Image 1: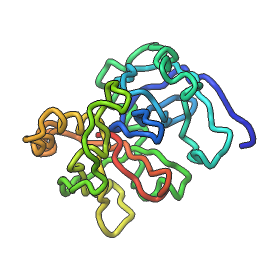
Image 2: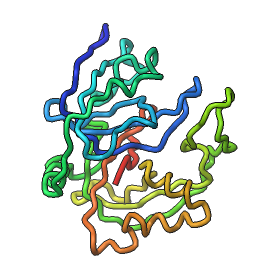
Image 3: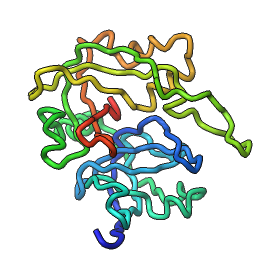
Length: 241
């Protein structure tokens, strides 16, 4: 891509948001995933943590591709137009145009996007996908990238906790409905809701599994929205449950 491509997405249904991360310039950013009838599954990055991008909201947003493809080569990846130069007022660019209110519509949308196995996504040129997992184990792993927690930035303004502030990270082992791998998938869960629960309940982080129903799976039907890593395209994580 020799020059920037820009457009307006008029029908982006928000499906999930990953836990905040921190860029080298100090901005706390969030990877947001959604679906557009025209473009399919979409990744918006970076987005502000305080944007009104709740799950199932339908929004209109101006987006662009980076000028240099090495910034993010993934087909599904877009930036909100002016995401760096207009960072402080980036939320003004998001226009709420509706919401998927009916449970049946939500279920129908998710099921229409299901792939057979997470391992099939990248070989088929996809960096995002939805799979139906058969969950075998869920657990916490020590965060080897943990940094000291700072609730304020260096200039004294409010700072969100980001992924590397947490002592433990949630992970899940599962097989897909049409699994193509011999061993189970073992992936980190990035969903913001998991980390918010851990932040608010630091002495009871194990209860997060009850909170999402993993300890009573017979009552639920699960789907994972998974996405790969920019630096490791064959490695996928769970963006949201």
